[in-house]
Length: 89
Image (tube, rainbow, N blue to C red; front, side):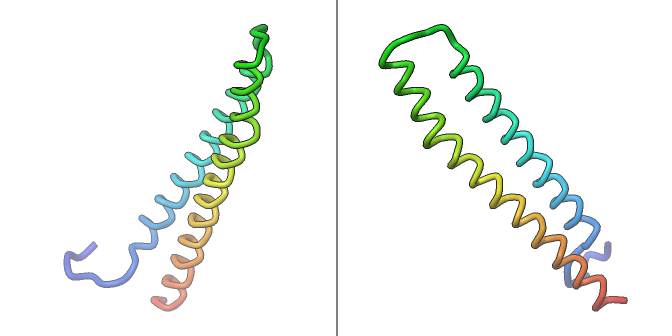
């Protein structure tokens, strides 16, 4: 790429978007495993219930919402790269 180029480097944008999407999926998987591990523990009591409730009802939904936002931004970036390619060709 030229040092004085203006506009989007569409190949780089698609690479970044793919990376965003795959990392969001990893976070989602980690959250699911975390919740399963907490729910599957033999630990019993109010502390376990509170932690499981916090993770299941607050942390996981917030993390999943963040992952969804990242995926939407990745889709937006790809759409902008497609628009840039269409204009440039």
